[in-house]
Length: 335
Image 1 (cartoon, one colour):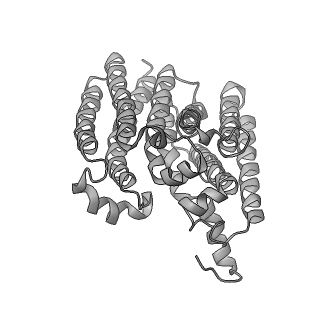
Image 2 (tube, rainbow, N blue to C red):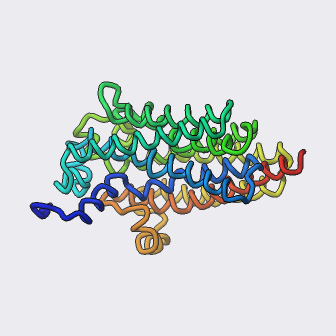
Image 3 (cartoon, rainbow, N blue to C red):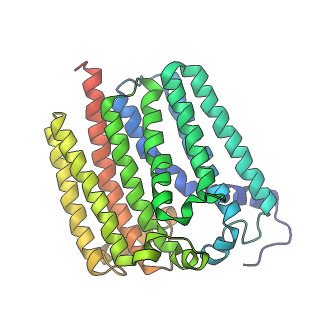
């Protein structure tokens, strides 16, 4: 891809932002929102809203941004095959500039975690600090040798599940209250949902993974079986969420979760029958309406996953927030 010999300041800033992959920042928002809701302790004050903004910045632009930036620094050769338009392989940023990008957001994320630890204090403050430190460390070893967790799906998927699901949820809960027992269950379900989705997201890089010796599930067992494994995890998450909702006394939310499960399974059947063209009725809406947000791909299996992802994420998001809100209401009412 040809680029100008020397980029202007605005283009450089855009390239640095692209390296942080802003589209991925929003991925931690549902867990942060559900974690706060399940605490039942956030007040409508400027102080609490600023804390909420700060924790989003820590896990979103800084934490998630670091994971994307450092990944590009270590995976330059793979990106030349899988994503040649990224800032470093395209030549818009040098490798040194990419390294400085990751170092700066890393330090800012750590600094924000230290602020939370000092401002909130006690066990809650330590939960937030430890969560972000571990998430940042996992993000580093995900791409960096010698561990390079992304080399094997059995290490990479749990790493993503922790950083995008478990850690943000528990940290958001600790932001305003002691960790609720129900929050631990909900955070765990968010962990497994993230695991299932990252398994499918590997469709887009299957060719480069195979050439680079990375053991993604798609490389090992093929597209259809990868769909099947992921769907089993997703359906189990919905089923457990329905059971927990009912056992906690939330009958109506439990019914909504079961409806979400049935709708999801109907979509899954179509994808298993046709991994390359399933859920075709959503093709236009996804590519035209969500294409810029979730991306597009030349790999047909990845495009079908993107269509499924929109539907699945909507169903899980609504149910996850509903149950988390009911948990929070229980604590507000002192039950």
